[in-house]
Amino acid sequence: MFNSSHIEISRSAYLSNIKYLKKIIGKDARISSVIKGNAYGHGTQIILPLGEEAGIDHFSVFSAQEALEAFQVKKPETRIMIMGHIGDDELEWAVENGLEFFVFDMERLKQAILLAEKTGQKAHIHIEAETGFHRTGFEYEHLPELTRFLKDKKEHLVFEGLCTHYAGAESLANYLRVKNQILSYRKFYSYFKRHGLLPLHRHTAGSAAALTYPATIMDMVRFGIAQYGFWPSPETQMFHFKKENLPGNGLKRALSWKSRVMVVKEVEAGQFVGYGDSYLANKKIRIAVIPVGYSNGFSRSLSNTGRVLIHGRRVPVIGTVTMNTMTVNVTDVPGVEKGDEVVMIGRQKRMNISIASFCEMSNQLNYQLLARLPANIPRVIVK
Ligand SMILES: *Cc1c(COP(=O)(O)O)cnc(C)c1O
Image (cartoon, rainbow, N blue to C red; front, side, top):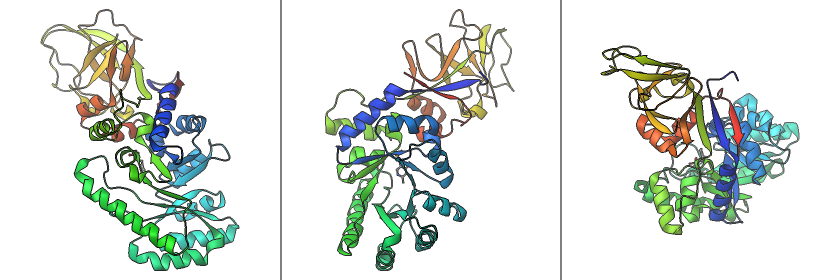
């Protein structure tokens, strides 16, 4: 294989997560699987078909570019929703191919309707409400103009959804803000209803909201991080288990990241290891070089602090992580040889390196760490 590391995605873990999340949201709510950021580093081409296998028929991406990637691997009946960026020249493609997309200003709406008229395809729109996140979305004051226009152009569009996004439902510190957003969303919905415009889906929740505020589940949940087996935050996890009184974790990490030892050698006492003088061998040590560095997603801030697994033992990264390699101290692990398996994230024998511990070591959010795993690392599905 032409690669220095690979990522394994566990089919059984992923399917079990979807089953668990379905149980939480009930059978009346639909799941939209959020696969932006290369499916949170898991690989769109791996996750989308697995999601379809689990019965998911709706996927959310950020941009038209991500939508195209998903479009190329999906089943014909599977729906794709673009939540963010669509370039002017991409909008026509989206309308023509029946993709769903967020609309958060009159300009995009008018463009979309023009293209619907031009192509003879209906525009499948989700109206985004500004409820307090303050990024994108229509303000309440815009509703008279908006609803008038929607009614006017009724035959050229499908009102797929009325949506919003919460400002940090994963942290208790935002409790009031989220509560107010829920109220504000209801005001928007009432307005549309009074004007005879009923969206096919009311959807507001991502993982944290759905797991913490049941009122946000509505007709559809946009599950990102949870489907991959991670809690949005430790608070969400604690709160969820208190509420549900459920045993065990309930979510399983689906991703592991592995490599192999490239070289093993000895370093005499008094020698520095790697660039500069950040690591001094104070006795004779054995080191192993791993062909994974910061260009492969192993953060440079893990220099002298990271850990990996070899022979089921945790071994420390010594010296600086370079662009393509890191060095670990294997003095206390007998018999390490070139070609032995190295685990950066995942399990080996009875030891485990979780994303959470990995993140704490490098001070990164798990979202960020996952999304930064380079797309060119091969992904494979395992049992
Ligand atoms: C990323 C995203 C989600 C999913 O969030 P998770 O916390 O990963 O579940 C949902 N909705 C929107 C608009 C998003 O951008």
